[in-house]
Length: 261
Image (tube, rainbow, N blue to C red; front, side, top):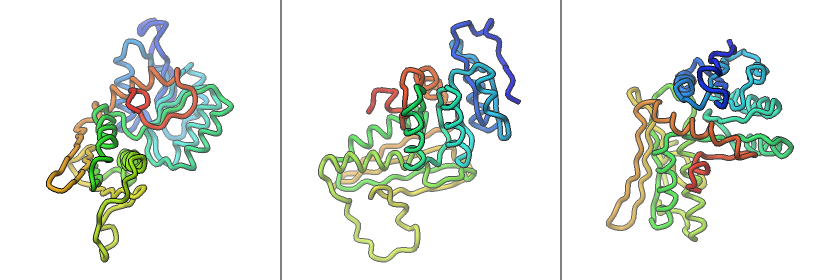
């Protein structure tokens, strides 16, 4: 249940009090451990499905980290905004309509919300490198590879990557990549995200992986990132927890907190 789990006398009176939603899940468990190990943060509440979000405020949390499920995450964010608690969200499944509703809500609240498709610093850099490179190449496609327990496809990271690539190509005046396909089985060419092809693989033994392939006549550039352990996401999560309070409104993508966008 959502009871205080740390003592400010141990972590320091200036530590940022943090609540974790989805604390019993794989990512939530890792986030809790990372927050507990950080001397400038204090884990004050762990919440799981069915817990009353009012306990976040009762525990004195200034920031809440959400690693729950797509069906719950938007409602969680609206509740946190109403409580005046900043939110760092790693749950996938967000679409433009949901983001617009949060943005509208935040227009009347001095609260910061970060929705990040990926918190691994290498993955964020991969997205930034791919967007920068995409305007120089004739062809570009994205392949994401995850464990078979992942519920959404393509991944939020891959969608975010494809949208950034598409925006960079539009800004450079590049049209769609060449593709002579006229007949194909359903799904053979992957999903189209703003005109960029995205392919999703689900295999036991994988954690979270992505590669962007960019092609020109006579050359191929591959930008790949591999997360082999959930610990890879923690530096980004902790940086977001420390930073979100200084950025009121909605931010989509950790790259904005890393001066990459």
